Length: 390
Image 1 (cartoon, rainbow, N blue to C red):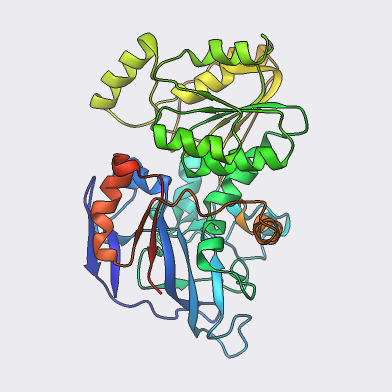
Image 2 (image 1 turned 180 degrees about the vertical axis):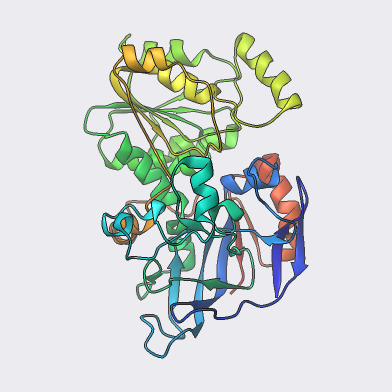
């Protein structure tokens, strides 16, 4: 089969690789009908995540048709269309039983390695380094889905791939970010980054009743999408002081919550910090906590900082500000399974737009390496890339 594979920093190739096979009775093989490039895939492309190996198959946003099952009694049946969450869940461990799906204790077959890095094992993830299990991802024609009797959701009749593909990651990630921020009626919410996750966080905050939704972004196409998604205010961080503008909008009180949808490869745009950012990005593009620092500064006392953006290691933050202001910080990989059914209902009701952010579509994985670069460089107005392989 063909698949998009990692071969080193900035080296993504469309390779011919062996077809996946059933390894366990709980497995299924899925023929991928749709997949996408995620912003966190760019961290892999940029060489930011450790333990990647040459030839690893990428991709954790995918859905498709079940073509083989590991057991005649499997919960899933051949021919069913399924949405596959990016995290793999055993359904049996303490964390799964608590609904904390992203920290499943058994699905990461390299859990010991993850525990050495983070203190405890985390769930296995598709296409996201050997630190998370070394599972091949779904930017491919076929994918093996382990423990498939737990996390995947059968597609409801009448719903399309285009409607549901982003349930695999970015939609529930944006929703969980707003949920972590405890958004409620009348709140002022500031959201750093109007990429796909940020756009879904904006939609989620709107549904949850936020009065003012501030999008912090510098790319024109993303600003337009943020406004379409429900942002009431936009701060162009390349031209304005974010903290001062948030104070102005909030009449000096600060945002009730701030959401960091950027993560480890943030850039500071305005003033001296922007100059430092530009220099540092030339020297090293890893773990730049500019957005996190701004979030901690801009949120009101006893407010919440929600962090769906990916960080891979230690970062310096102002703990004095966190403690003295009485802040709450909430983060984590998304518990995708927790949100599948309620978000599917909102999509069916037309309350969530899952299509307008898709700017680039392809029917050919061979175009993947170039589209990775287009997405990374935000060329041609690129916000989201989807492959339609049906």
